[in-house]
Amino acid sequence: QVQLVESGGGLVQAGGSLRLSCAASRSIVSMSDMAWYRQAPGKQREWVAVITSRSNTNYADSVKGRFTISRDNAKNTVYLQMNSLKPEDTAVYYCNAAGYWSIESRYDFWGQGTQVTVSS
Image 1 (cartoon, helix red, strand yellow):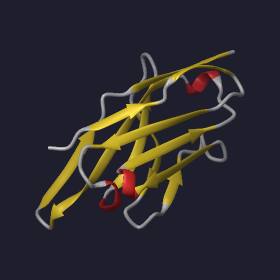
Image 2 (cartoon, one colour; image 1 turned 90 degrees about the horizontal axis):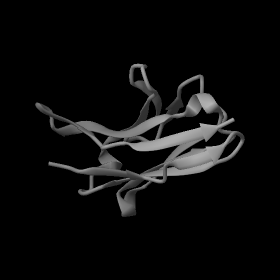
Image 3 (cartoon, rainbow, N blue to C red; image 1 turned 45 degrees about the vertical axis):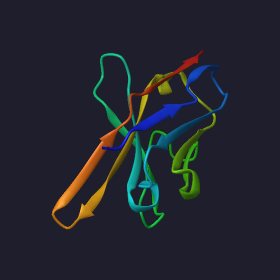
């Protein structure tokens, strides 16, 4: 089993920045597709960004140009740098790690989430 622990959430004014961190309890960050999702009150969880095991990155249109996903394999940590924050970015942000232990054994782990609140 792998634990993912998010941190870095908080309250920030519109236009401000936050950096979220997601630390894994095992060395899986380099071998996984690491993603961030978010869930706003009353809404479904939505995908925000991903960095693949091959270091390709992709972003939801709503955050493209404002958010940057990165990882530090040595620290088993993935980050989400969030700039130019908007009130609509308010949500609980979740970290996800997905990959394969072997051809027949897939894994998919989630963190507990960290709250981001952007005031107008």
